Image 1 (tube, one colour):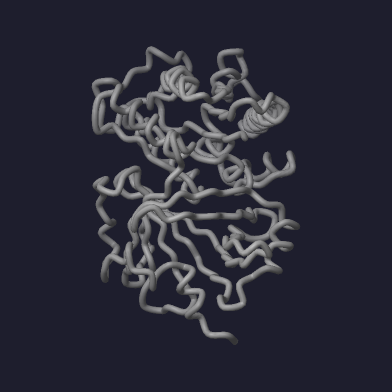
Image 2: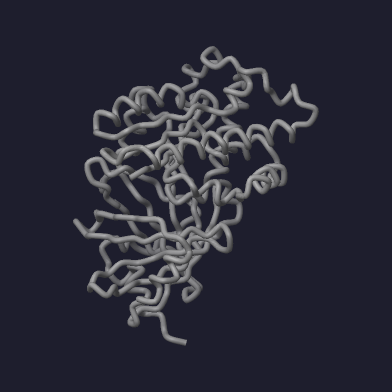
Length: 362
């Protein structure tokens, strides 16, 4: 079993300090931890800098090529390691961090030269944890001294932090680690989020769900969306699960999910990636009593929380908002552009499985 995690964020967010801390703590939990340093820092400390190239696009191409090589190397190495313990690869920045420093067309072209796309590059990692720059909320700790290639003022750091975060909005598991406490508390917050993702001790899905009025996304800065098709299955052995197609065309990701309910807000969730061929094969076991759920999922970051808003074609006046939490009583604030009709966390009529039964046959 191999998991992959990206640490991202603005300048002086704590990524470099977090890597050895996470390695030590996760190894105590029985995991093999592989850490991958920041590619741009490696290049610039070696003398390969944007200003040293004839064209900025040349530097972007080299940075992307080197990052893809390094990351593929670690993914491949993890596959051939002994299976005596689970493995997690922690990357100091992922491919899509490059987009914060380059125009979309340059970034897309650089990835195309290496046989991938921005969305496929984003979603190749299992989870993304954005560590907010100290310049935003912990100004007294913002410094340029611990990284020789860092030059940003606090104002520039905050702008770059938000731009970097925007590059990852749309990923299925994005979490923002802010500066609400001291740095030790920030590291422990990060560790707890990662433990929750890895299932230490057990992976749980803890969520709150709300029926909302149809939202207006105009003017929402940290926002992205993805098309989802969800099919419920009745397997030959009598078990029930679902498969999901997330995205379209070559960017589509296929996932099989099994859930076991613990409480109204807590579930154990087991996910596995599928190939398109495996997905198509499993769809032959589609539950005949349920129609496929087709929806557009809007992903919004607000006040360091990641909200999922599902818009369905059979509703023109309402939608469903969900937020995944570390604990059932974790505080959060619903974005101001959202008008809540009612909470439906424990209302079985608003599960996707129930909605799939209510969709009329064409």
